[in-house]
Amino acid sequence: MTKKTIRIGTRDSELALWQAHTVQKQLNDLGYTTEIVAVKSQGDIILDKPLYELGITGIFTKTLDIAMINGQVDIAVHSMKDVPTALPNGIVQGAVLERANVLDILVHKGNLDFLQTEATIATGSLRRQAQWWNKFPNHTVVDLRGNVNTRMQKLNDNDWNGAVFAAAGLERINLKPENYINLDWMIPAPAQGAMVVVAMADDEFTLDALSQLNHIETEICTYIERQFLKTLEGGCTAPIGAIAKYNEQEDTIDFKGVLLSIDGKEKLEINKVVDLSEWKKLGFNSAQEILKKGGAELMMKIKKTLKK
Image (cartoon, rainbow, N blue to C red):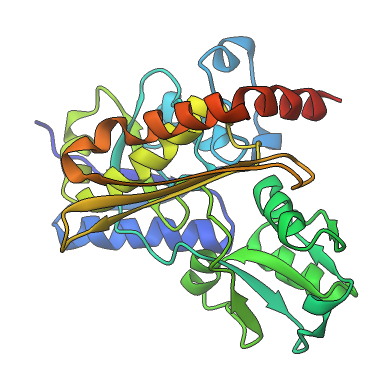
């Protein structure tokens, strides 16, 4: 097997670079030679039809997937919650790193009185929006886009009462402010807090290297959550939350899943505790239960609304 320099593809946001450097350090510590390659944004690349036919759907991952398919980089590091449940042909999951904080947090401006009255909350996530409206139906929710630095700046520049962020992203780049509260009632995005490294399926050298970074407990829990998402056919857009946790003392998996209408008025939830040996079908079976309880009709409504 030829020894080679593993080229790590990344976008140029602060969080993306943090993730790439984290993987680089872990590979270097194992004795591998690595190089960080910043890949131009999607707008700089002309996408031809055959690449679209590869099944690349993730807006955050497309550019790096194409760079890998074209042989410019060997691996790409992603926030796992941004990665479509079906990877493009030829690309495989090489490692899931140990999970960080899974929670969503509300970053506010020092006064939480608005939780009892009217408020304007910012988020670009349908899942967060729907769960917020389910709990606070009289609040206004506004759209918030951009990388974490941009979103934090927009919160400061506007008269919103607060904005919802993934705790892990802010913690990784030391942006978590003093004024925040943990939203422990909000079910996170499938695979929130986890990082995944993907590579080409035929690249044995790189896959062997990545296998040494894999954290099995995180891999299992994120598999369950993403299977739940995939079975509901949510992609990255429908208001779907899922969290699986391994209970070491009992050797069980605790799972919570939720599907909401976009306005938050309808909510279908599932809570399960199963023996660890049953993990492979847990996400699928949980999603099937939700679909039978009215989830199939709700998913059709969501898809119609999103097409408008």
